[in-house]
Image (cartoon, rainbow, N blue to C red):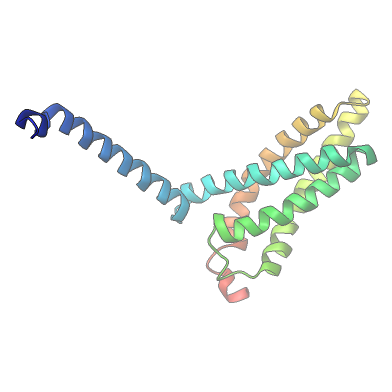
Length: 171
């Protein structure tokens, strides 16, 4: 037989347990809102996440193919990461897989990515002109900075143009 005092919980334990449950519920609600919400802040958080994944793919391709030269490695990285990013933006960031076809997302999102490719190509050429040969680390950091700046503009364009509800009529 158990001692009756061991069967009763102390009010302080109940309060801590309730606070922990409430905190866990808030965290779950916040994360669910980030995953499922269509508010601009939730879309931007998913956009940044997808950008990180596609940038990692870009960096891997750039480093692996850098032996062919900076510009070919940049082109291959841009193509691979753009294909991945456009599809993840269509499905995950903007929840538009039912409204926008794969081809439309690649065509329109890829058109926006061309601006990034031109900017990164110019940045690499300028760095090569000013600094001579640079390491792959310097090149990846330069490309990351340029891509980050362009990414902010790209988010607005994708949200307003490619993955908007109006795209349902086009897709």
